[in-house]
Length: 482
Image (cartoon, rainbow, N blue to C red):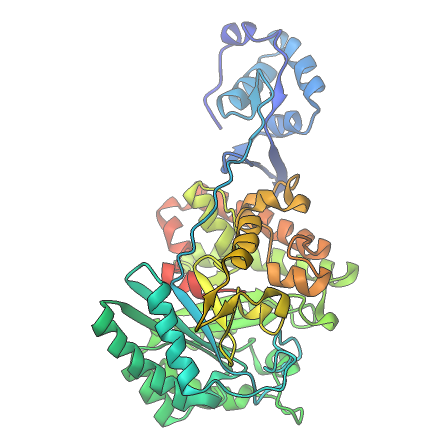
């Protein structure tokens, strides 16, 4: 809270009409917090200041007219004025739209549109994306690398192996990495490779190759055996947990910083805290825990599941805060994105890098904004040989690159944290990237409020550990598309 004003100073302003800035005020654990939406600043509040911010503008002005007789009210109003949350004129933030340039640096390759698992919440319909399935040829893979090098501007590039299960096409991974090394030399680039895998196909040869070539690896594992095997199953219904754990220690051994464990939970497996504690035992360098998005109807939120998820995230937030203070924050989560935004003081304008820094390539060489759009021909942007069709990507990116372009988001206090949510999920549920799912919005606001609380408490209680809560490297952040 700012230093209080004296009553003499406050008398000068007692007759002013006052207007509130756009703020979101809430209470947690008996403390009051506020987000200045346009300014992306978080403040602690006294109970009186919080009460004032919950009033209408007219009620605040009426209170101000009586403040010269009450020093507590005078000081509270003056503090809020100093912090920019009460103003003598109605301030409206008018966004300045910019057309972002395409600066592709990450290409996600669907090396296999097949999978040896039948995960219940899979966005790719068990890897096939609703198509006949199949594997990317070595020619298409190498031509994709050529496309990335040709279209990129920067020196550092990322090639992400995706699917389906990309290790079903291990030979092509080997070819890609060899071709990438040749392209690095001939085009003065630095290419990083990243594999997202279900972890069931590891063996000595694959693990040795990945380590020897510095490939970063994300392994999907949803916590302990009971939770994991509820969702991540083989086609005959057997759980995949034991198979993953057979090889995971060898993958992590002496390679911790290049391995991330990713847990994807839903209302049935919603023990975020339990999953985090379990995954920490493996000793991987990174753990990322999030919730499954609504690509599969069975796992879309409704009134009941939304409340389950809110309760689970509330418990998880307390664990994340304690973990950040005690262990320098070993868990990345849905909170991390919001806290990074608060720490930067900038407004998040787009949810992810899709169609800006990141593009996805289907097994036959078609280009999409991200894997969540693969197979949806209305969102195909071109192909790796002819390039991107300018009018298609211009329309998509001009409209979606800034959350203020999304009508449903314009009045939402969390818009510069959430940034509109996952556009692929919006298409899956509402058939439009401009119509976010109302249940997802409700959950995202809850997560954003918890993230504000975590941020404020770290600043207040252990500021020396604050940056340790943000371990997502720039490269890793670009890889996280969902």
